[in-house]
Length: 119
Image (spheres, rainbow, N blue to C red):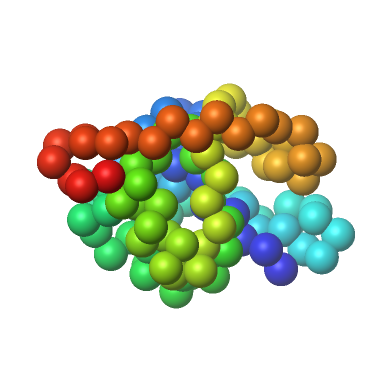
């Protein structure tokens, strides 16, 4: 099973990881079929200064598909063994399909100094 986390707002990828309303968690079986989709609450300041990476790892998340994300958050997620792919936009289901089909171009615009968060 694979668990993918997607920073979300109104069932769309939120363009900035640290400002999302919630995370969509999508579970896929070995055939990459969606078996379950649910939400995980985002805490205030859910970027690099939070325990979100550890919480996601404890939830079994192994991949994060983001719009924009800072280097500090990338580092924390990677240290929790969560693969980070950025540059996504659109509806959650479409993003998962693009990931499954490897139909995406990554445009990783890393935030360098967002609210003094050493990105």
